[in-house]
Image (tube, rainbow, N blue to C red; front, side, top):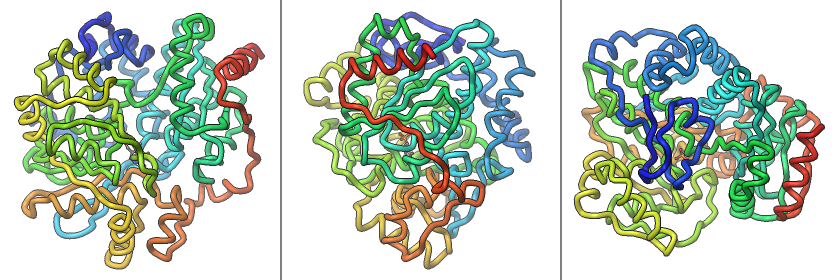
Length: 462
Ligand SMILES: *Cc1c(COP(=O)(O)O)cnc(C)c1O
């Protein structure tokens, strides 16, 4: 399997190279040259299998010969062994033909664990083989950083540095980043906003001496290996509701378009998905773009669903690539226009996007009201992100087609917003009930590239 860039000008890579590279050199995102398909019989045969076995069958065609079958099975087994639920991604019913897919049973209580745990093991296996070490640097507004540190902690071929904005993440998120004791993971509290953290990480990647010197690698959501890991739970959930013999729809709380794009891949692979519904918070650029074709960022308004407070949705580029019939030059042009303020999707491309995706948005008040309403009527306590999905799903769904809404985080990850909405204090699962007693380890640092680079060099030399 070959991987090509959405902008058409970067070297064609194999899976392992694309995974270790992350962002393509032409600024684009890697995608498989062709999307492998599964027959109806192959999909039917997934019914009743353990999550890990479905993961193996769905992902195998994408990884080529990067890992032998036994090794890949072992990687998958290790990735999901730390989950707090035997089903990994269990489903509960919310109402008539409406189901909630709980993706929050991983070690940091958000769906990002599904991908991060897997790529942690894949990086480790690949680097062990080559004898190389890498340094991973990432910026986080909360969930990505904690998932990355959990996934890579204790792995000896990797050092991880996570930059987060000091004082601007929830206490649970902060503690998840500052309490791992392993010496290869480093939480850096930066005096600045999330955008500053993101900008400094970008600066590090653009400082080629530094980048090559420390062998810098990225694991943000543009890494195709992360998208791939997320394709799996579309299969497990749809099959458990009767696919391939019955169609299902999905609603996905969306920020960077990574999770919903995994649904698009599942559909192209042959899974009978009727509608893919994009749910946004008040930062609704994706909803506006899918409705009107206009993509113009106009500043982020902080919300109670912080992991969706995004205006530049990086994985949307992948959907545009397909909507423009895999024309890298056209995508490149749109991205240049975006740098200058925004772009308008062509009529033909917009029709293709609208044929695949529905969309809706949810205000702050509606988010809180949904948390309260669903707790009162079903006993299910939703995190704010999941509540946005449930609200939009209720509006958009066709009663005759089962709707699966993705629950992207555990309510205990956002206790203040959940308690304010419902009057219920969401308890942490027993396996992490001592989070508030664990020792914290963090380095406070200025918003300064030279200081950050010096610190990273010093730490990895130890
Ligand atoms: C990251 C995240 C999202 C958004 O996912 P994307 O793949 O960026 O669209 C939604 N909810 C939670 C809890 C998240 O952590």
